[in-house]
Length: 292
Image (cartoon, rainbow, N blue to C red; front, side, top):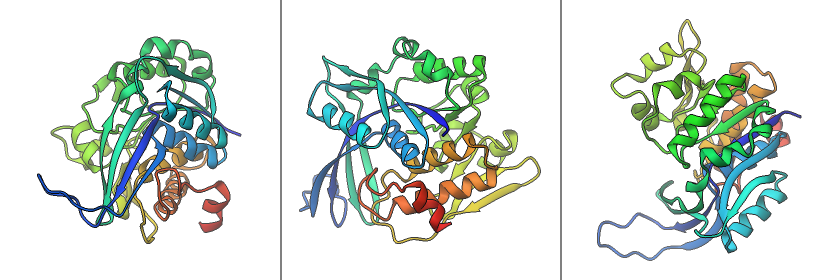
């Protein structure tokens, strides 16, 4: 069993389903409201655990009801919570999600996630440096991402950076990360002033740009390659990118080829959108392998 460490956000998703998004100043009647555990870090941890990895989550929640639900959810999904710290003086992070017209819009409130600091990371160095791979995203402080990139680079621990949500990333972090998985919007921010094709060519077999229904694109050192997605009837696209990242980390850390890893991750992501909730549709290893 491969050992993964996920460093990132844990939040409660507050999800409204409606026929369409309201215009400015407009009030609409929605169809449903649900609360489900989420956060990019937590989602990727759950996805990787369901796909067969031993997963350690590093993050922070509030000492409130949402925090308790998130911790219980980790345990139900086999994610180790030794390094998920309850913070007493601030609420658990939340994501406010509108599902309409076959896609989602999201506003994230950081809450306790802002306390995933370099100082807190220092308390978990042993587990980080013993990992087969580390996953990190950007719903935590920028300086934490930089610190993790530095220590992984120094110790030779593979690091997968999912640069979401979009914000500028230093050249040093880009150089130190082993793999980087932006979507098209995030790639535009990450490689400002460069065409995506140029960025992929500059970092062959390292930068994987996800393109939704089309699949994922990268440069193999000779040519640009598109690994196609799998057509499905989407119910809820929330968490599809997180499923992709958890899945590709599992596959790469197990020694699968890039093509096989990307096909595995694409299939996991496609299955994830067929059910409600960021984590609700995340497939098991058997479901992915049985459908490939």
